[in-house]
Image 1: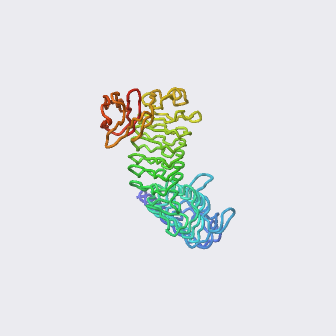
Image 2: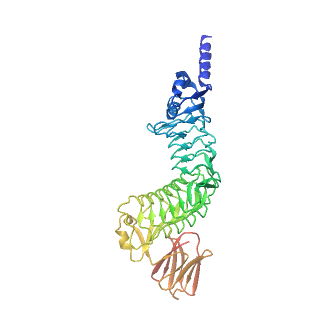
Image 3: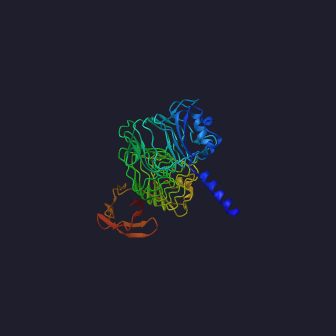
Amino acid sequence: MKKQSILFLCLTLSTILSAQVSKTVNCTAGALSSLLSSTEKSTITDLTLTGTIDARDFVIMRDNMPKLANIDMGTATIAAYQNNLDNQIPAGAFCDTVNKVSDTIITSIVMPTSTTSIGYRAFERCTGLSGTLVIPNSVTTIRSQAFYECTGLTGTITIPNSVNIIGDYIFQFCTGLTSILVDSKNPNFSSDNGILYNKEKTILIKCPEGKSGTLTIPNSVMIIGNLAFCNCTKLTGDLTIPNAVTSIRYAGFYNCNGFTGTLTIPNSLTSIGESAFSGCSGFNGNLTISNSVTTIGRNAFFGCSGFTGDLTIPNAVTNIGSGAFCNLTGLTSITAQAVKPVDLSNSAYVFAGIDTSTCVLYVLKGSKTAYQNANQWKYLTNIVEYDLPTDNNDITSDGTSLYVADSQLHIKNATLGETVSITAVSGMPVYSGIITTDVLSVSLPMSGVYIVTIGNKSLKVVY
């Protein structure tokens, strides 16, 4: 009986301790601590604040109220204190930026309706915040990382028409968000299909990481911003970058491993940023860098192991960063279109993880020795020279035309009587014979890279 009584008492105390405790406080700036007893600080779960508060009161809520889950500051006013301005949710309001500790208990928050600015890292890693977050219509500025890694936020978040400044990475790693909407009257930002852009839709700022399905990027987009699609693992299918895009910035598509089709890079692109496609392991087929690209950043395609065909590096490329093609383990060939190898002396592990003994390196005729002696290129020991790069409709120096149409390779205007052989990059023979007509047409069994030898000339065709 005594044991049962003790057990009952323990259960009762546990229930009391875990129960919701609500309190409304009419505050004076900086006085919240003095208006709550030590017991209240340790037990309150729901707090409504009226009156005036400042940065000191946010510190009390963050550091001294361990059970505080729901905060309503709707009718309160934030006063300036030290570096924090009037009506500003302080930097690190619920994230201790010095000790790197965040408040993970808070599940809902109502900001003051007079709020004009949400400070740097204000709610960073508040993983307990759940459901839909409402940004007041008075807010003009959302500082960098304001809601960084708030993984509990779900559904749609709306940017009001008052916002004119959005910092970097404000919704980064908010994996539950599926849509970002912008009030149509906002003069600075816009949204399309749940993705955040500048007003003109020339800069794609952020795709919410919970977004799923296939992706269509508007033709107006010129820049894909830092971490724009980072960790959007639910996007699927092919990815076509529109023809207007000139730059994919840092980690633009980092870890988008849900893409399972081809990657199409436009001729408008000049720069592929650091880690732009790192971890996109689902892409398949060939990886063709467009002729306009001059810079391929560090780790740009790191871990893109799904590519199973040819990597084409155009002669416009002058800089390739460390690890740019590291762990592209599925590649069967690399085509370098520059006579002089790109200098890799300041880059490390560019081709690490590629089977350098079996992956064929195709180089222009007369440049084999240069590649055999070049930093890192020399590790690709299977080097084959070809006369001219061909791409579905090219003419060789002697007037012979090669083009692909209707799943066939057509050889036109070759010298009658010359021998012809067509071999897949895997070594599989496709055709062997002689030229007897003005146009020789040969069916290609599958997409891939083929070496066409006509007389003493070897050429490469990508199909």
